Each structure stands twice: as structure tokens, then as C-alpha cells.
Image 1 (cartoon, helix red, strand yellow):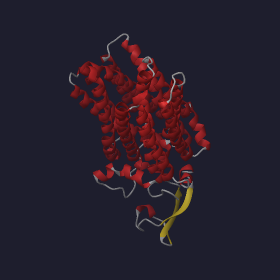
Image 2: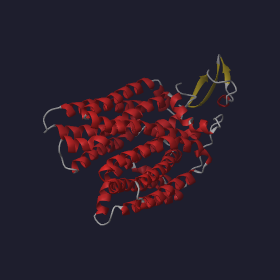
Image 3: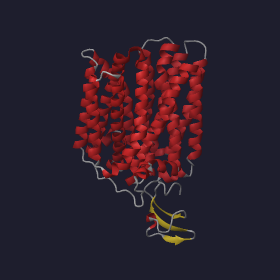
Length: 453
């Protein structure tokens, strides 16, 4: 897997991602402590609101940035977003009011909503070979999982010798380092927008989302995002409730629960590159979604079961399986989007995925917390498990098996017919008349014009 790091441009971009993620992890710890200083016992409410603001920024800002991304140099967009994040991190230690935290969090996450889709869209151009890109996706998944383990440990070590405000300085240095690494990378030129693309701001802002609703595989991905959001919300929000409230364990048990979830995800991310050489993306991703449903059933038994000796170890096994299943869905996502969007549409498509996936979390995070607190963990499991079941079944139905060939053999020249496009459509230049449509040949695509061959 590490052979892909021989590519200098990708190595610099991957290091930039790791450095920025570490800075973000430090900011998460520091923000929690800042919220407690400002709000005391209401710190949880402050953090919950900040998390909601983060999701709103992701949902609203990413599509807008995607609309203008093709007009902006990629390097300038990513470096500018990093510098904005660094400036916000530098301001956070000086706030004295809760509303100031909310404003700065919105600015920080808006910059992240600009950086992440642009970063994701440039990687396929840097690594055009399918195998290399698959390895890069696995490394990216590993980076996210390792950050969730490494950053809290680093923050704890730093807090033994300094106050938490200095963690924000570490965050700022992380973003500045990321910007420097992006500057040092030789980025490929972006592909031109495809002919016939709508020119209005609204049309461009929604171009990626419309692509998701036109292509069967991407419609299925919408449902898969919801299934993953249900599981990750259960783990993220209620791990502390299970560890401290249900089983009466020490605070370290919370870290253990989150750690085994990350371990399950990392294990699958390491194994998938070779597996995807032999197994279609559809089988892996839908299999992961269906596994989430099975695990939710197990969590329901654990939650309502009797006895203490077996339930906590069983919950750790369930959390590990959740991590593995989520990784089965998330790791190949970039491959699916890459195959389903023309090069000139990829930034918009990745921005749409960023926005639409976080809108799922905007639903499931509050549901996991509020329903669990008001009605009990059992009802939270039932509600989120039902969402996961409906999403998994929907994903299977929305992604027809015949579409697998269209995504598995991208790059193969195929002759095919279009009967639903106007004869003067730009895509049909050079095509010949054939019955009710026009026929031509080109490399296999799985975009809005070639949803299923």
C-alpha cells in the first residue's frame, strides 16, 4: 500500500492531510475544555450546538464552493482554506463569549468544506491508475482512524506541560504546515468543465447533487451514507453513555470503545485494496451496509440483555464490527465517484458527497443523543437500526447489479446507443443515426449520460 507514496505530489498532499487532521484533533480537545470554561455544566449544550453548526456549514458551503471551484486555481483554493483555518485557530484562545465560539466554528468548518472536496477531487488526477487510487483511498481512511487515536493522546501529553490554549497553537501550526505542503506539490491542471454544463450559479451549485440523483450507483450512495451515519452516530454519541452510565466503568473505557471502532475500520482499510482487485465495489459496499443492520440487531440484544459479565465485551465486538462495516462502505466511495463523474465535474461531485453525507449526520447525531436521553438507549438502537435497515435495502434496490459492469471496467471502449438525448447534444458529436437514437463508441463511463449501459 505504501508504494503509492513514491509519487512525490501525492506524498506531499497525503502528508498535508495528516498534518491538518492532527491539528483538527487538537482543536477538538481544546474546544471541549474551552466550552467548559465558558459554560461550566452547560458545556455539553455548547458542544452540541457547535457540532450542529459544523454540519450546517458542511451542508451549505460545500456545494457553493463546488460551483466556483472550476474558476479558481486548486492550489489557491486549498491554501486559502488552510490559512483561514489557521487564523481562526489563532483567534479561539482569546474568545470570552459563547457566541464568539459559534461564529469562529462556523468560519473554521466553512473553510474545511472548501478544502476537503477540492483535495478529494485532485487525488484522482494525481493518481490516474485505479490500483494506485484505491491504495490512496485506504491510506486516507487509515489517516482518519489514526487521527482519532493519536490526536487525543498527543493532546493529553501536551496538557501535562501546558494549558489547553496552547493546543490551539498546535492546530494553527498544523494548518500552516498543510498549506506549505500543498504549495510544494506540483498539482495537475484541472479538467475543463464538460460542454453543455449549465452556467448559472444555482445550477452549478446543484450540479453535483443532480448527478447523484441521475446515476443509479450514486443514488445508492446516498442511502449508504445514511446507513453509515446511523452507525457512526450510535458509536460517537452513546459510547460514553454505555461505558459510564450502563456499565459504570472508568473514563478510560470510553477511549477503549472508540478505539476498537477505529481498529475495525483500520483493519478493513488495510485489507480492501487487494480485495477490490477481485470483488466488485457494489458487493463490498452493499455488504458493509447489510452488516451494519446485523450489528444493530446485536446491539439491541446487548442493550436489553441481562447480566454484566458478557455485555461489555460483546459491545466492544459490536463496535469493532461497526467500524469494519463503515469502512467497507466509505473506503471505496472515492472510486465510485471517480467513475461516475466526468473529470470536469469531479470537484462538484465530491462537494455534493461531502454535503449530502454530512446532512445524514445532521439527522442521526441529534437523534442518537436526544432519543437516547429522553426514551432510553433501547429506543435509540431501534430508531437508528430501522434507519440503517431502510437505507441498506434502499441501497440494494437503487444500485442494480447490471450497473456493476459499467463501474468495474471503466476505461474499456464500448459501442452504445443514446435514445434520450437531442441529436445536437454536444456528447453526440460524430455519432451516427441508429433507429430512434444515435450510436458511437468511447471509453466506458458511468456518469449522468451513461448511468447504465
